[in-house]
Image 1: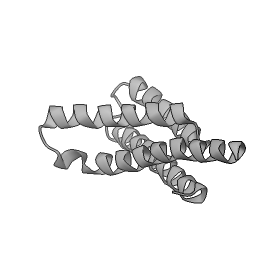
Image 2: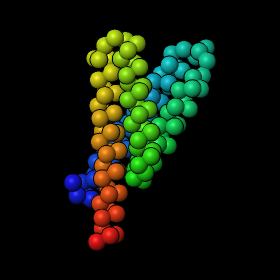
Image 3: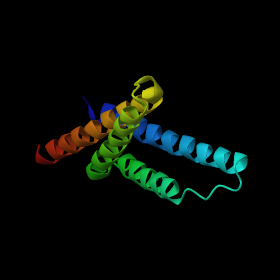
Image 4: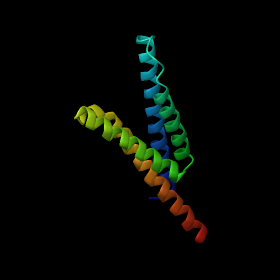
Length: 120
């Protein structure tokens, strides 16, 4: 994997995470419109902000942000699959998590390549 390929995969991973945030915000908005008497889902909003911040960190090639984001998304998907007892309900989440994990791996590889260039 070259440095340019790693940068491309990092970009795809961060875009996938931002798409997850956008979809989550849309769902919260729709629920707010359909059920105006429902309480504001503060925990969901905080998680979306956290995912957005971690996605920005991944975009900046931060390995820790990528790793935490990957664990957070995979944990969320696994818990949803356990609750619903179906993999079909989490297919979109699995696709997003795949791109985020690949982006995280690319961030580690990118740093390794940069370090190799410095030492060469």
